[in-house]
Image 1 (spheres, rainbow over the protein chains, first blue to last red):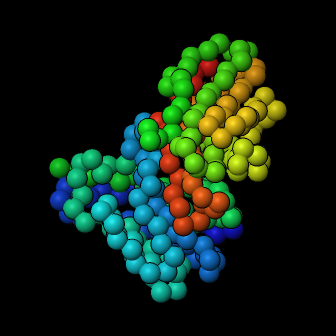
Image 2 (cartoon, rainbow over the protein chains, first blue to last red; image 1 turned 180 degrees about the horizontal axis):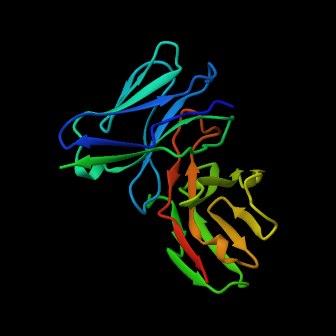
Length: 109
Length: 116
């Protein structure tokens, strides 16, 4: 099963881009990279996912390296409401989503 | 759709009592997941269902825990008897289509369980 490693915590200044890294060196060719976040006391929220191409939506951008061994989630203009724990997930089986410890992002005024 | 609905939002019970947590998934979603979250262990997958059938319950901690999905719109997670170490936030999530890959999971707001 592929596993991910993320820094336990990061800070980002409000209005600046937040770049959250994730390593997934054992990822398989058909496994997707997903990002979720969890704002305090709420259920996790889907952000974005990708296979090998870079992806962008209204929330964030996902940059996946060519060898697919790492990726970066980019929040282009972080706000205080983006303070949350961010989870990088690689699907470990056909069906289920398994969460690691994630990165606690603090957006500072 | 109102999203994944969990009830109750908060539950306080005494040790030894039976606790039942409830979940209504999003209509049309084929997958339902139960997670538990604690400070020490983070988010743990307990069990998941596909088309109302339990597929993987390897995350269920003990025989005191049981989960059912009698129909596509309702699932329960039961703890009997409850213990203080079961205190946690329990999340239910659902996902559409026949596979999770390339789709997202939608989470409820959770049930905060406190066993005293």
